[in-house]
Image 1 (cartoon, rainbow, N blue to C red):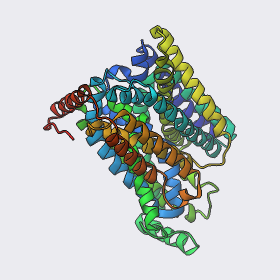
Image 2: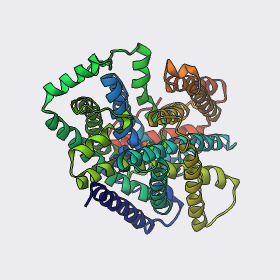
Image 3: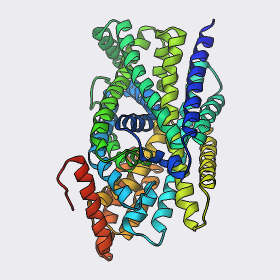
Image 4: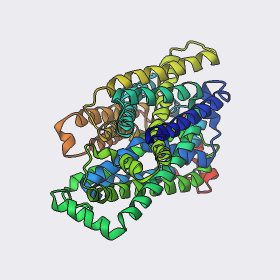
Length: 502
């Protein structure tokens, strides 16, 4: 059989497995709570791998290795910032958010948590949150579809549009019917596949090149031909460039598709084991992605070749180094990264549309109708994102960075203040959320984005707006403050720490 046939067999087997997992989850989905949050019964390992896989997307296997391939270790500040941010998120947000969302009327979405946490009767907070989720997730899902199109283009010589249709179609199918459990269970399988690929590819490439000395010589040769100093963490970068890259870690606190995994855990106590598993997975995979980019420079140079698209360096190595069947399985890891993120984002977008925008009208609906609307929400967001993806004006990293900044700036400060500051008011939260979203959106679409990542000004100004407006508006009621104390006590008691209160 030809190499293309072997690779096709591996990819088709992977896609069939994802559909089978989605069908199994469909059999376990009875109502909107199951569809959106899996009934709050995730084990820590499942939550950790699911959060990691849904977080990293095609950026980990394509965007990051491509950036390292072009610019060297200076691009690793993004990975460093993300790892620190993820650890802080698991440590300080996960246990308390799990406790507080249950205390606050068993909230199953981030917008509903904000409304219930602050006893907002105006519904403005919930509507604004839902709209922000729909806007930025549309760009985020689009980045995954762009990665899918690029993947099939680089791996099979297929049309870019074909890749979008295949990746979008299969992901839509298992998400549409499997809901949160379908997305989560497939995330676990995809996370393990990504881990294996990011260990095997750089190790085999390293051995094939001949060890560290040939790699170093290859990097120096690339530098001599005008390329960046790949072994420097600071060469060619200004202080603001490094700050912008490391600041990606700030975004974790506000990513709905990640923190919703915290809400779905069995208890706040599961956050400790989840943190250890999740951060270990993240360190290994990020290191593998960085090494893939560095070794790729030497490997491609030694063969006297060039890459038209640096973001395909992982795809290139997998096809050159392995038997086509094994290469197909490695390539499936790229699909895993792409599809796991898309599915998680579609579920959160659907929940925002149905739970936070449609149901607030007050109309009573059956559980079956609610799930049907949730599926229609998934279809709507996927369709709009697909339209955007056909316009290839932005790279994968550009699209991910824009959406990541939007969520981090809009929701990050509000999540932290909601969990740790009892003086936060609904008007303060609304002001901070809108300020963060507007600043991130406007900054990211202006020339200012070339000097400082839009997440930084958005996060800072959003947080300041929330604090200032909260201090000049009426203090929260006694009921809100009592609920805050109860959530803090519940999180601390289950985590084994002494309760704290701000």
